[in-house]
Image (cartoon, rainbow, N blue to C red; front, side, top):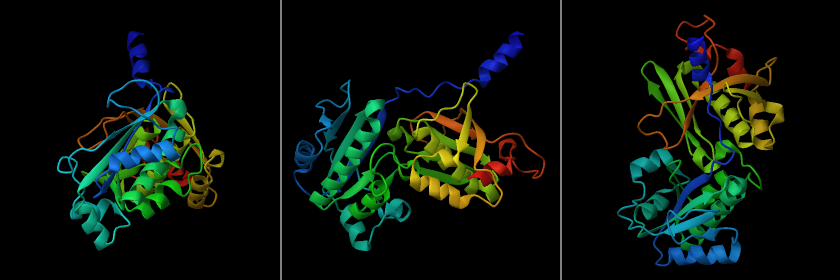
Length: 306
């Protein structure tokens, strides 16, 4: 009996707290001399819901801390990094970003109840600041750099109010892991949620499984939560975000279901992962059709569902 209880305890998933704060760090690289002052002026004039805090680790409420570290200590991405993580850059943009003289960093801490509104306001503020200083946006959580136009297109164009389209707010780093593949998200902390990981994926189905990750992330952003055993029901038709719903529907194979069940388990963080709680997506037992398919990738219906 003791052994049975122990196994049951292992299977339980720690709840995803409804009070988990939102954390986001966005920055603008520029060469203006008054970036922080301009940020404060923009908040006062256009974004009064963003209270400016005077201490970095001040507790309580939803607020933004503005700082201007030396650019040598908060260096812009170099040309090699921009090749992979730069969004919308021309050679001239790249030269100007790399040569930036200043950086204005905005750190948001938001109560869960205010999280999406505060995060939206922060994105608008950062875009306004980048345009005002002829600067470029850096998302420290996803490790991406943006031109102002690309930032507006990717992060704000489809986000009017309420919860955003999750896949527009995080990235997935997918890479070989031995003979299989691993995919892990970066940036879910800004949505008040754990990051997600898929371990040991067969390369041939890695892309469909990553689309299932996007579906799971959207369900979590819209408030759905797994039960105590980690079971999470995915239902494409129930998604509130019209863009993610349309995208997921476009991937559904003829005759496939538009719903599935996965299990979320506590994940194991590795070097390079976000400093955030990590949940692993478990797709169920091996069905024997692919000898190299890991136990949780067996259900092709889970991949088709996306």
